[in-house]
Length: 82
Image 1 (cartoon, rainbow, N blue to C red):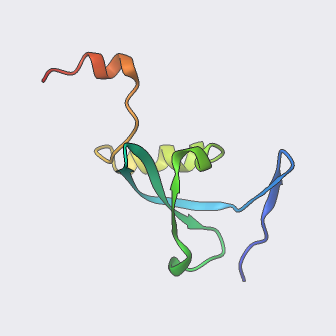
Image 2: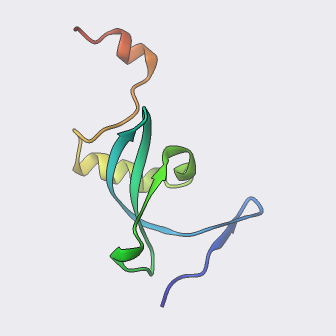
Image 3: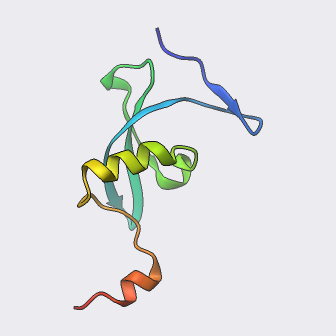
Protein backbone atom coordinates (compact mmCIF):
# COMPACT_ATOMS: atom_id res chain seq x y z
CA UNK A 1 0.00 0.00 0.00
CA UNK A 2 1.56 3.35 -1.03
CA UNK A 3 2.46 5.75 1.75
CA UNK A 4 0.56 9.00 2.08
CA UNK A 5 2.57 12.19 1.69
CA UNK A 6 3.92 13.83 4.84
CA UNK A 7 3.68 17.53 5.56
CA UNK A 8 7.00 19.41 5.66
CA UNK A 9 6.94 23.16 6.22
CA UNK A 10 3.30 23.32 5.14
CA UNK A 11 3.78 21.33 1.92
CA UNK A 12 3.04 17.69 1.13
CA UNK A 13 6.08 15.55 0.37
CA UNK A 14 6.48 11.84 -0.30
CA UNK A 15 9.02 9.76 1.61
CA UNK A 16 12.14 8.75 -0.33
CA UNK A 17 13.14 5.13 0.19
CA UNK A 18 16.37 5.29 -1.80
CA UNK A 19 18.29 7.25 -4.41
CA UNK A 20 19.04 4.83 -7.26
CA UNK A 21 21.05 6.94 -9.72
CA UNK A 22 22.13 10.46 -10.65
CA UNK A 23 22.67 12.24 -13.94
CA UNK A 24 23.34 15.66 -15.41
CA UNK A 25 20.60 16.86 -17.76
CA UNK A 26 20.96 20.30 -19.33
CA UNK A 27 23.72 21.02 -16.79
CA UNK A 28 21.35 20.28 -13.91
CA UNK A 29 21.80 17.43 -11.45
CA UNK A 30 18.91 14.95 -11.18
CA UNK A 31 18.35 11.90 -8.97
CA UNK A 32 16.40 8.74 -9.73
CA UNK A 33 14.15 8.39 -6.67
CA UNK A 34 12.55 5.20 -5.31
CA UNK A 35 9.51 6.26 -3.26
CA UNK A 36 8.68 4.45 -0.02
CA UNK A 37 5.68 2.16 -0.44
CA UNK A 38 5.67 2.39 -4.26
CA UNK A 39 6.88 -0.05 -6.91
CA UNK A 40 9.80 0.56 -9.29
CA UNK A 41 7.33 1.62 -11.99
CA UNK A 42 6.78 4.78 -9.91
CA UNK A 43 10.47 5.73 -9.70
CA UNK A 44 11.03 9.28 -10.98
CA UNK A 45 13.92 11.48 -12.03
CA UNK A 46 13.75 14.50 -9.74
CA UNK A 47 15.81 17.69 -10.02
CA UNK A 48 18.28 18.34 -7.22
CA UNK A 49 16.15 21.25 -6.00
CA UNK A 50 13.30 18.82 -5.25
CA UNK A 51 15.60 16.63 -3.11
CA UNK A 52 16.65 19.11 -0.42
CA UNK A 53 15.18 17.06 2.47
CA UNK A 54 16.81 13.73 1.59
CA UNK A 55 20.44 14.36 2.56
CA UNK A 56 20.88 10.91 4.15
CA UNK A 57 19.61 9.08 1.06
CA UNK A 58 21.88 11.15 -1.20
CA UNK A 59 24.88 10.56 1.08
CA UNK A 60 24.18 6.80 1.12
CA UNK A 61 23.95 6.78 -2.69
CA UNK A 62 27.29 8.59 -3.14
CA UNK A 63 28.92 6.32 -0.54
CA UNK A 64 27.85 3.33 -2.65
CA UNK A 65 28.59 4.99 -6.02
CA UNK A 66 31.36 7.59 -5.48
CA UNK A 67 31.91 8.10 -9.24
CA UNK A 68 28.27 9.03 -9.93
CA UNK A 69 27.59 12.52 -11.30
CA UNK A 70 27.40 15.20 -8.62
CA UNK A 71 27.56 18.94 -8.25
CA UNK A 72 31.08 20.34 -7.97
CA UNK A 73 31.56 23.50 -5.95
CA UNK A 74 33.36 26.31 -7.79
CA UNK A 75 36.48 26.05 -5.58
CA UNK A 76 36.93 22.38 -6.47
CA UNK A 77 36.31 23.07 -10.17
CA UNK A 78 39.01 25.75 -10.22
CA UNK A 79 41.55 23.22 -8.91
CA UNK A 80 40.90 20.66 -11.67
CA UNK A 81 43.73 20.20 -14.15
CA UNK A 82 42.67 20.19 -17.82
